[in-house]
Length: 286
Image (tube, rainbow, N blue to C red; front, top):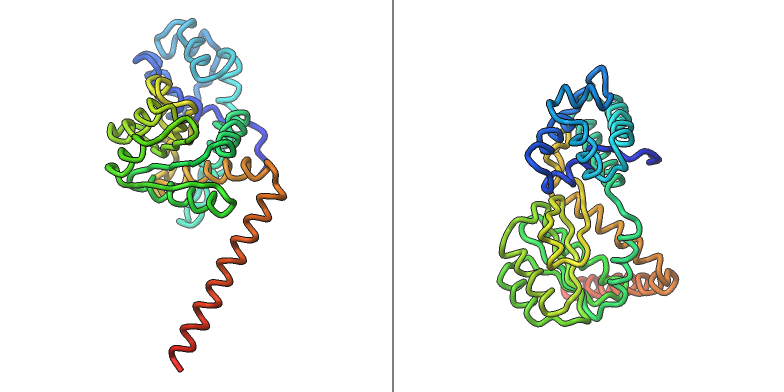
């Protein structure tokens, strides 16, 4: 699928945590994918019982230049969804849910940020990735992927180990945190302490908050599963894995031939070890 239009819905979700109560009420209306006959600023302000200025501020908080741009994208978002409204088979439900998630991911991507974080990975002496629960699985996958192209990287999913690791960081290290909710205090402490030790910090989350700016250098936003159709069918770590792949692709674009050579050598080494192991096992059975 070619992505040409960005959906308004994930942008509303991404800005939700920083909204006022009035703005959250507006957000709920649009996230429910209502389709009023008249989407004009005047009529929508009357329908939602808010001022026109409040609607304009809401649109800008979601990342749009104004209400007109927001409502144009919102209308397009609804049209994009209609093609999959009558899904009945379970397999198609899953595929549709993943497609919806990928569309939302595209809408949230900031390419300049992705390139910047890829460069941070290249420049770091060591990279540390932490996540708890399902995010811990994603952290280990990230470490495995980047390790194969020569990055000095380690993954942790134990809170106490993450705390200990953060204490010994310095300005040559890069510390990643993976958390869809971004709320667990022990996890945030891991990033906070690393930041205090002058390490660069990156958080991949679906729940950005203003306070993250105090101790996180780059907050990468991934889609929330909360308002995703059939979101309960999606593996919780999938949004994180998609972003890891995007970061990996951006990293590989830098000095591509050298990194592809390192990856090839890693694959050859793994295959050689497997052949030797099979040969030894076969010999011991004779």
